[in-house]
Length: 441
Image 1 (cartoon, rainbow, N blue to C red):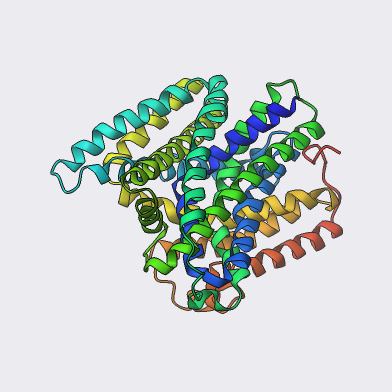
Image 2: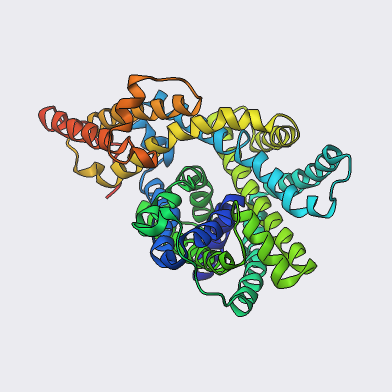
């Protein structure tokens, strides 16, 4: 495979990851961390960039990808788990949310307080999803469109905004907020974790592996090798963009207080470039949201067409597009209330599954380790999900709050470690299991 192929796949992956949330997090982190910016952004990059890339590598290590990893627990678990992930980060959450953000930042600023906002949203989402549908229906052309046209335009727009910001914004970094006074790296680490991009990486893995395989790469080691190389391209661009946006946010803190990253970017673009800045920011959000939605739609198309042989890729893409369009205009808030708890439950399980994948060849009986780790992790992931549903848990909640890292929503870490250790002990005590699904050496 050529170096240019690796570059283009890496750029395509960058555009798939870089959705609305990825634009908003870094500026707010920069404004909040102030003089503690550098350790904070370093922590953010470790989990916000490093964790998703590790997930991609883990998927590439195993024949059959993410679903095979889940099958090490149980085939039924794998199917349910992957369906929940694809539906939650796809048509029932990220897709309609990105469409709404694209409207809020790309068109709504020019409408003011005019009546008929719902009509404008309806018309905008028609155009938005027609573009998404047209690109997603041609996976072969998608890579060319996203890596050679969409992503360079997106990066160029961000570069223009950031360069002007570096030149014109010369205010010193402000004092950090209370959360960043001490432990700025760990706070940034948690913020990167909260992007939940590791879940997207689990879904995108099928698209990236397919792109590499279409170039004649079939050997497992070679697939992993090129996945790592493409992932490094993505990691470099994500890190540079996150750092630049965060730096700009740190400089903007001297100009006022802001509720979120969107406010910072809006204020910065207007301050730096006037009306043109508002247009530039709208272009950035629009391109980022379209690219992310195309990536999610394509990933869902590949997965569900493989899962249900009678459903063709084009049929699934059409269905996903229609659902995303409908939810963008109707009941998005209610969908978010339902989808987010499922994501909260799936996230710890994903991280533990990926971590075990890198060490599974050292387990005497991998299934026992996987199942034990999943049971312990799953119990506390379920508790997290029920809390997100606002279900009162009484003493159970009191207990979980006493666990390490509970203040960061990571009380599952210690139980996951306990479950893994118990699984290893049971593994050593039992007979070795077949290694047909193990990582190819």
